[in-house]
Image (tube, rainbow, N blue to C red):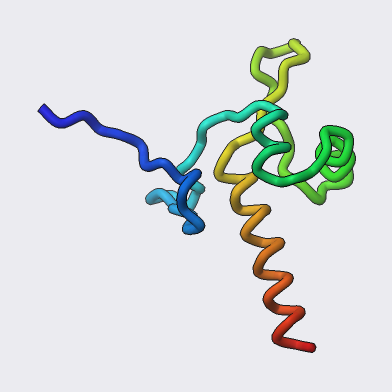
Length: 92
């Protein structure tokens, strides 16, 4: 019997969308993983998020202080940075 296994997008540069057009990787990742993926410091992640320039975090427990980010949204943000860089190179 074959198990359904979620694809490991950590080894892929391609973002996968589900049938609703949402990012398929809806795992919640904590700040350390966000920092590892993005290369940003903790304070910069929170600053960009509060400015609306980085994906918003999700409360893990209603009324609690623990926060996480949707992995697909963080990966999409990274892909957007790369696309903007490539566009600048093309326009230069």
